[in-house]
Image 1 (cartoon, rainbow, N blue to C red):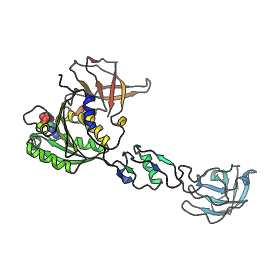
Image 2 (cartoon, rainbow, N blue to C red):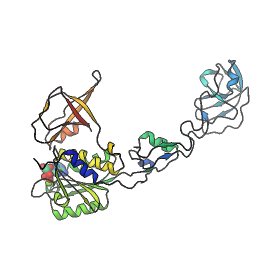
Image 3 (tube, protein in one colour):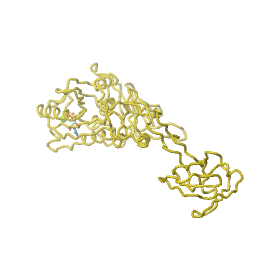
Image 4 (cartoon, rainbow, N blue to C red):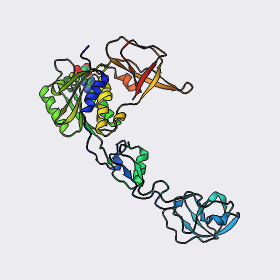
Length: 393
Ligand code: AMP
Ligand code: MG
C-alpha cells in the first residue's frame, strides 16, 4: 500500500501540469460560465439618458406642491420616442416607462396618482411629489469609465446582461476548453458492453462548461490507441480516455502516458496522465463509476484551471452533513467516496445524507441518483448521526 499517492498530492501533480489557455475575445452568446481575463470598463452611461421609471406624467415638481392641480398635457412620449417640446410650468407630458425625460420636467407622477383620460388635454395631479421622483438618471446603473467587473470574474447570466447593456459583444475571457472523449476496450468495439463512459463524460464536460468532442471508441490495440490519441490531441485542448489503466494484460493507455498513479482513493484508484504534443491527456479508469469520480477529482479541476478559474475555485463546493446511516468501513489506506443523496432539514438547519444505492465501481445507478459524494477518510468511518464532509455534485 506504500505505492498509494495521497489524493491531494495526485491532484497537485496533475493540475500543475495543465497550463492556462490563451484568453481571447469570446462572443457574448458563448461566454456564460467563462472567466474574464481583463477588467470590463463601461464605455457609456447605462441608462444612456434620464428616463421615466413609471408610466405617468413628466412635470415640474413645484407645480404639485398644492395638489390637486390641473396641468396642460403637451405631448405623449413613448419608450423609444424623443420628446419634441420643453415642459413649461403648468404643463405636463404623458410619458411611458423607459421614455426619455423631456426638457424642463424634473419629476414623474405615476398615472395612478392622477385623474384624467389618456386622450384628454389636461391631467389632474392628486398628490405632491419631490424633484427627481421616479426619474432614472443617466448613468444611474453604470457610469462611463466605471470598472464594472474585475479580471477573474466568472460570468453568470447577470454579467451577460450587463455586458450586453454596455454594448460589449465579445469580452476578453478564457475560452471554453475543447475536451475530447475517447473510450477504449475491445468489449465496447465488439458490442458486448454498451459504452456508457463516453456519453456520461461528454455530458459531464458539457455540464462543466467545457466543449465536448466525441472521439469514439478504440479497441485494446497499442498502435490504434496511440494513433487515436495523437489525432485527438491535434484538435482538442484536453483529452479524456477511459479504460486501459489497470493492471490487465491489455491495458495500453497507461503505457502511452508518462505518469501512472495509484491514488489513495476508492473508487478511481488508477489514473494515468501525460502531455501528448503539449495537450493534457487524462487516462481515466474504465469502471463507469470510477471514470466519473476520476473526472470529478482530477480532470474537471485541471480543465477549470486551463479555463482561468482561480486556484481556490477549481473543486466542487463542500459542506458538512449528518450521516443518516452508518458509513463505517475498514482502514485500507484510502479515502472513500460514497455516492449519497443530500437533504436539507429546515428546522435543524443542517444537511443530511444517505447512500444513493449500491457502491460498487460498476454500479452507475447510484451515481446517477446521487447529488453528492460523502468523503470518508481512512479509518473506521462514520456512524449514523456522525458528521461527514460531502462534495456537492
Ligand atoms: P478496464 O479499466 O479497461 O479494465 O475496464 C474496467 C471495467 O470497466 C471493465 O468491466 C470494462 O468492461 C468496463 N468499461 C470500460 N470502459 C467502459 C465504457 N466505456 N463503458 C462501460 N463500461 C466500461
Ligand atoms: Mg479495458
